[in-house]
Image 1 (cartoon, helix red, strand yellow):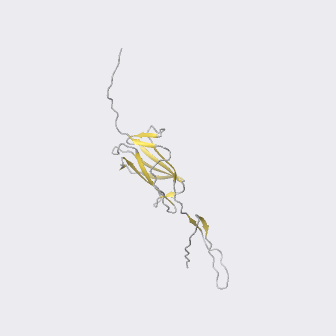
Image 2: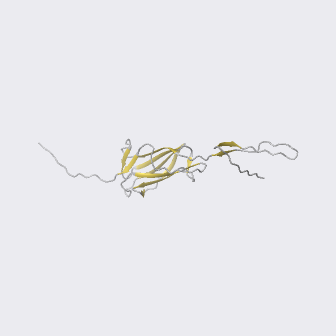
Image 3: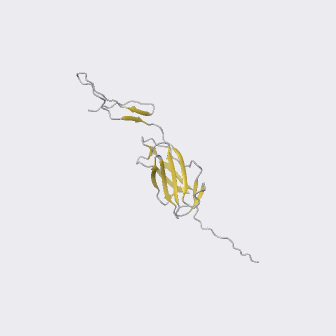
Length: 171
């Protein structure tokens, strides 16, 4: 048989479930429950969002990247994250147009995730923008994030430099 109880539990936390029964002779059973109930209504957040590229300029905060460079968005959740299907979702754009190459999302350990994609010649020369969608294991949706937390940026510049004039001076 089953028993269903609907109750308002507050505040958030972990609650022990205890289930016992008494037979018609008044003999109580032992606790037959096998778990706990966790109440989580907190909206998850991101404590860190950093964008970087593998361009030789990797020490710069405002980086310039070129075709073929790898852009990595590293995020740290305030708690364990998922996105319904088990991963964080990232969407990259350049000049309001979706990036040509698809991104790869990975949990690199704990609450840290990365979203990675390769810049392509078909991508517009512009700052790399993004939107991060995520939720927690309880299904509470986080507020979509579109900004870094450390001032970092990556801008695609695939224009080949030209010389406007060359002069040689001799004695």
